Length: 215
Image 1 (cartoon, rainbow, N blue to C red):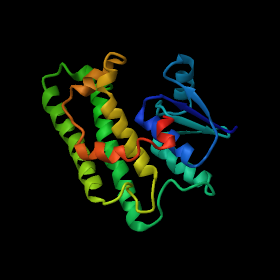
Image 2: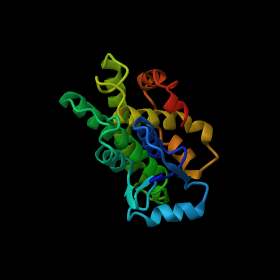
Image 3: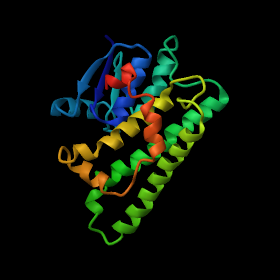
């Protein structure tokens, strides 16, 4: 087995990579860096980004979930594609992932990396502006899935864009039940965002997929 994935089990970024590996029918060793401090240090040592997930393939480490997904399509071209090739499908898919990350990155950063700044006088104004940006991304995604007229982002079917959006919805809707497990979670929940009902409705069509249930 040449593939090793350092991941956080509940992370939407790790989960989208696991869905990508499942889509390509690739076998891999999965290492939980959340529950093992030594594994977390290994993962952080593999990349200057010091983030998780990290994929190791034949000794080469790739960090960042989007970079990993792009790599998998290049490294394993004969396996099912993660990205659609038709121009319109590609445009919708890439823009969808950008909107997902635009929302997630802001919410995660405010609830964790930047929370130490919350005592600053300008925190309220800055956080309000940033949460507004995150909400606009979520609203845009909600409007998109409500008007697509199909269950997947791309007309060609399930793709990396669906994986990113599905894991985003699952993570955000599951946060309230996880309050008390990790300090940043309650902070993120209290930021004031909401999931558009259309995103929850879209996700309902995919909840019983074998790969999604396996998450």
